[in-house]
Amino acid sequence: MEASILLGILSLFGSLAGTFGGIMTSNRLTGYRIEQLEKKVDAFAENHNDITARVIKLEDNDKLFEEKIKTTNQRIDGLVSSAK
Image 1: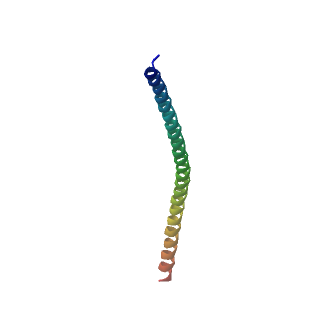
Image 2 (image 1 turned 180 degrees about the vertical axis):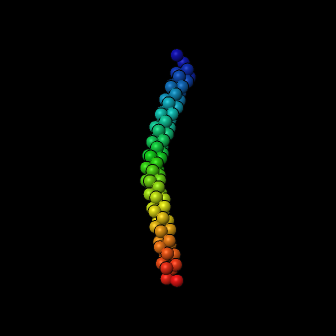
Image 3 (image 1 turned 90 degrees about the horizontal axis):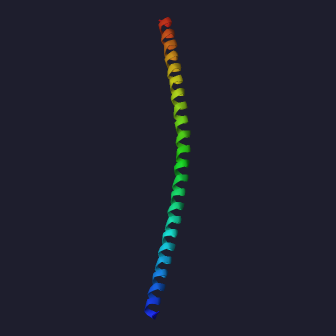
């Protein structure tokens, strides 16, 4: 074999190895980034569920307080009416 053909074949294998190594490294990095994003989404979902539960509880408390205020206003009106 001539030296130039051998050099061409070695260059081909070197290029293929470099390309394959770059693709594998990029694939690992992309997988790592996706994993980190999934963790952030999971943390957000857990936080969102907690907030949703707290909002529902606050809405229930708001209804309770509105009812108490309504009852208190009726009692005040009753006292004012009886005082006249």
